[in-house]
Image (cartoon, rainbow, N blue to C red; front, side):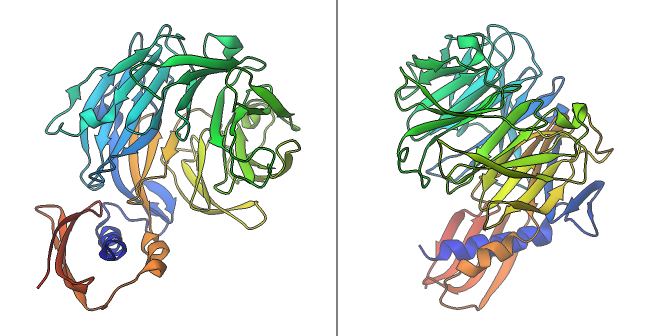
Length: 439
């Protein structure tokens, strides 16, 4: 119904007014910031504990719109409902299969999470996320719904939601290259193929819809291969994965991770160790992939900080980069594919040193605009300070006459006015309609 964009917009207005710690004069509490507010911060011990936090991902229940952060820790995985981002609920923990590990990584296809770790003999946990929906009140210990034992340790897991395949990378199989698993039936995950020409540290698998007509509609994997640079492969045939192009670059030390632009024309990636061994400041490389057979690195953006870079993602014309000690750094993608800084939130205010501390990853894809940022020492929930301005231009409504009545006791907002035929609409803090009344 047409009321939804209006509700989300006015919800965001209320949230920006009532944000737990707005970014003002360059700080949100103790955290340096520019354009991003702090909604909630969970210290590590408040969200499952362990020696460190690591990766994060997200899931939204399609029927209810409820939002969840999936937060990796050294000794397990935590699940936090953030439907109300000012009052998130830590509801469940999934213990590690074997030993604790610094590394744990998660991806989601549909209603299933796929979880791996560098811990020996860990394999891949598969969890039906719908099992989270009835949980509330206090954190539950849960078990995996299914399990895949085709590899032991795995540095990361890559997912292609459109095709139903996941890729273990950095495993103890296939030279640490692509270990391809068919999870179209999550209850029966099966080995589908491999690619062992390079050790792969991280990757992104997509159905390519960019301008290169030779590969449109095919499953392409962009592999970030540590000391071996970037490899672009055609994985349409899982039994015969073909290298399209291998790319290296000057001052390459350890190509860590990257993500393609939404129009599939540019890849943004980083080098985790060039700050430490070359002396560069934080760099984000920009690679044009309009011709997959001839990708071209067109340059890099170099920040003012020397902190190492880790995970980055593209969304809504921006690059969201978790850069260890300098926190979440957000850049705008310009028309020519280059990027320029847009804002930041420093989750490690102590320093911006060349050290492996602070933020590990982020998830900017929640419909509510909430951004999850995982740190070694906990979980942050953020939101753009001007999110209302990004939503506002899409408004379509019958009348601008309304009043807003927040109800803190029930974490809802009541809108009184006349839009889309409704006189009163009650929504929760995540933007979902609780009730509506018409005369």
